[in-house]
Image (cartoon, rainbow, N blue to C red):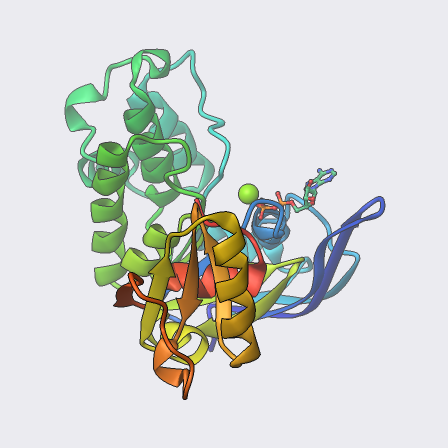
Length: 296
Ligand SMILES: Nc1ncnc2c1ncn2[C@@H]1O[C@H](COP(=O)(O)OP(=O)(O)O)[C@@H](O)[C@H]1O
Ligand SMILES: [Mg+2]
């Protein structure tokens, strides 16, 4: 059984095709990174999986349950961490977790709350009002809340969006521990490094569908080769370099003030410009080449 199986899923908002023929399978026990630029349709996909939005057409199955018919059974066994913080701010950390544990009809509510607090390293903040927590703590509480009923499948929508790098690293450690413990995770992100660090497999999403899928290493090898050369030069010279590389069949992408010529080992007779900086091809190269969006 797959943890998630999605076939031909469509969801429009007026003229906007947020999800546009999405096919996606997530095997059990892996962390799948749903990587795509803003507006790719990641959150809409998550909301369709949790029953917060209704699809126009297509098929969805979660943990063997068909959606939307058997959504209730599916939701009992999945945890959800939304992109937007929707915590109860006028109650304490502990009360937030208790409310959810009861909602999920967890047998040992205090035990489940303690466990979730430990996991999110919030045990010493249990009596804090949510409004007195830092941004990073709120994010960890949101994660703890999604885990209070020990779900088999966890949906994480942009788990570290807007956080400081240091807090982001803390959350990565927590998510990695969950993955190692065998929880199946579907994690959306527009941060390439987040996908690269946490995801066993990456599904690259753009325009409401998956445009490539493999492990980060496989994606890089297939779409960006081994070595990429970055060239810094005046705009006119960059344009010439770009044209000649493309004429030689190479992929070129903007890289801030530079251009990156991707997979130069495939160059054949094309000469790498003098002064070019060679580096290993990266998932960012794949992201920019395939989505046409500059990375964040
Ligand atoms: N409730 C909504 N009403 C109208 N448009 C929406 C709504 N939700 C999402 N969209 C649009 O659908 C597209 C995909 O959005 P979203 O799923 O949030 O993408 P992502 O999470 O990848 O950034 C965007 O163009 C967005 O503006
Ligand atoms: Mg989103």
